[in-house]
Picture (cartoon, protein in one colour):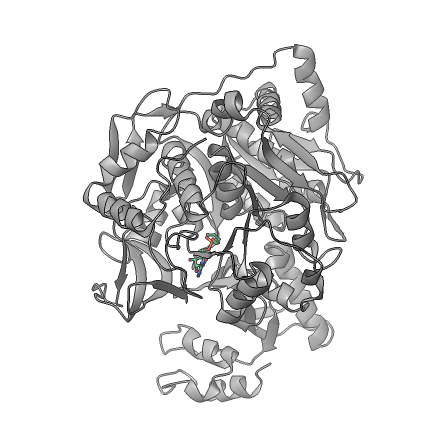
Length: 637
Ligand code: WT7
């Protein structure tokens, strides 16, 4: 595979950027010409941010799996597409070449068809990090079914909410998943979710942990049995469904500042072009490189940079089932040496947690295959950046600090590894095609350098979200209504003296805990479900490892046990409603919450208290009950 659109110098970057702004249709049309289209597009771009409507490559026909698999078969048939490392280092690893992957995807696509899945149907995938997860995702795409992958850490209630929102009638799961020394009972969680979802017709269950599970006649079937049925049918092929460029490819739920998580929708053509383009350019992928993205496919990072970006580029993508600290904190480094990993892409929270183990787990490793390091998910602090640079990259590997979001589909702001300069803790410059703009509170553009503002994007890029599933108005409200004619990211941002961007974190009520996005309102709703809770307010506070921790102020009138038990009960409730990732780190019981006279909770004050900046509370005189602030500040945990 060659990548004629791979940028190799600063001059080429400048030229590409300029062209992408002056002639976006010409620019993206040229990039898109490197893919396999059943029918070429009629028009590269049609857009209107007010509605919003965004159409890339309209009229074009394709199937993304033909681009991710079939078109590589002649040249890369024997090249590893997916290398899989098991949770247990003693268990044999697996390698799927492009030819193997093709066979497995086609087979499972036929399983889906046999089970009644049709083009446009939604399929919820709730699995651990095994190759079959990627296979299930691609098999959906093969037949034009819309996948909705739900991270294995979410609760039954969260799954039920997502199944209902997407009206998904099909589920693919496994008996259980291995993660470190734990076993996650995935099928059992699905069973709990399905009590609320009688419309689910079929659950396909992969065997992994061999834990006992309930199997309901007429609804639940084993993956392996279904594969055998396909084998006996003797029809190994499954022609790819012809999709319109703007047909839905997948839904991925993510948290916002209000209400329940929303289903971000990505479509086939633009998402394919953008994930590939950003993959090839940001990481400077070279044929033969082993790309190791440590994310879970349950998040957008896994969708874009384990599955679609790498595979569409004919790359070798390493998939890891386990966690960085099991059986010990050297696990990532073992994997890097074992498979001669060239690109390592991980999250600041993982780096900070591994830093905490000192250099012992690193020192017996060569790490000399590494060429490029990447980070994603949250702002990286300079200390972690330098540790990564010195001890993992040995000061020889460029670090790409990649800023993007579930909604953006792919990386929007990042240096290009070894091509454009890195700057610690800065995402640096926009990719070609990306036009960032900073605005102040009133929506007025902040021009010039050495400034800060709210980060917006003023022109469409192919990977951007198209809608939120089943509720287009919510999409408009959330992203396109805050500022006229701009996509609002929800992030605050600085632009340094030479124009580098540094993303400082969310300016809305969205938290970023260990790189996972959680809405404060969502956590509050979950806490409020507890029978003894009268009211609650949740804010983030700086956390050494997680980036942000969850701080909950709770008015509690329960009678069950002491405060410690009450806190545990509340935590358990949150785990049940959302999942363990949303558990509050601190729960402070209070007698009241600071509210304005109109009854609005003053989060600004609670945030300051949680951050320990009690001397910076500002004006509290307009509060309904100013005395409550002192009480809360004095009781701070
Ligand atoms: C939010 C999006 C996109 C992949 C994983 C997260 C924060 C992401 C960076 C970065 C500073 C970052 C932002 C963004 N974020 N990357 N390199 N520097 N902040 O996706 O769950 O949709 O979260 O993550 O706050 O809005 P997500």
